[in-house]
Length: 469
Image (cartoon, rainbow, N blue to C red; front, side):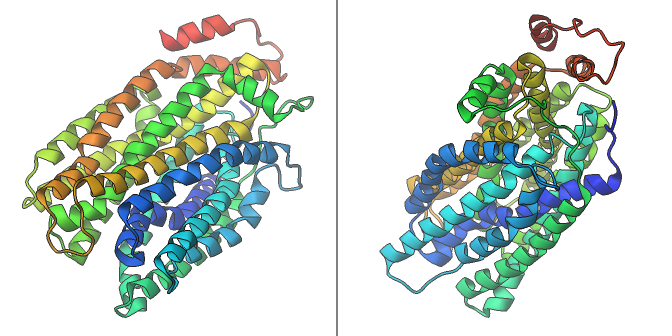
């Protein structure tokens, strides 16, 4: 497999791209709902509506962005130019999103819609090319897991910087004014993100190119992708993985504040401990997947995540240390599965090229990102609507029993139920390491990389059978 192995420097560079994304995006996941309800001053139901409504726009813009990236030709490649140019306006949009204008309630809601809309569009413009980049930097599906492990370790580092630094910066820079504090703190985080994007652009190369003769319209591309049943399953996996993760992360600050009754330091320790657990799980994921089938590792870690989530729901609120330990375990198990799920996306793209003869990496990953953002939107909507259902009141010291139960469910049992469905989807995805070795072997023979390879070794029916057996 030529050019399959990546240097550590390039793996770090690739990971820096998503670290840059998450210096701002993690703030959206973990703090925007709280910012909107407790600082900006709009109702949880409106927050849920904002999150969900943008996904209707994404359904149109994401595949268009993927097709645009696939058609881009530049001296930097198809996907890298977007990592160079788009992060600057994205950073500006994130700062504006965490800015609180002194306007009427209806005008503030309109401003929230507009800035969230701008951030989402720009996030699409940088993250679809970034995610597609992960599918074209190496042929080796095992090396992809390693690359994704570096990615999510560095993403965890971004989360650590954000979680340990954001709220103290809000307090220090705001000097009692949280609205001002969030604005200035997000400016600092955005500047750090820009440096990370620049490092990614400078160190990562694109190696896999689509067939030279391939020039297709968007509708033709979508029809080809629809014939790839593995990609269709991956869309569901992406949605479920995002939904359970973002729901748990969005609920964490509410859980630490009201269920465990922690102060500012305790909240930071609780959330940061979960991030450390996820980093540790991500770091060990490659070790497991190099020795055991990726699918088996994912199923085992998901089962353990479900069990730990159920136990966490049963822990009384006064046992904060035990609750924190279980929260770490949940995130550790999630960390093991995360690089594998992203590597499976590239596996599905290889399978699609093998089956249909076309490779549409940008549009394929645009679909993945759309379903990821759909999971984010549904999680944000669920948080808003469940808080309303439980009678949550912003700014009070003690929530009602119904509100506390709603918060606990969002962190534990609901993500556990979603994870059960996710495990079933992984089982039906089916492509194991043996099948992917054969797919890669046939693609290399087709591309002329191995003159002595037998291209008839694997047929579509035999590939599906071996993968699903």
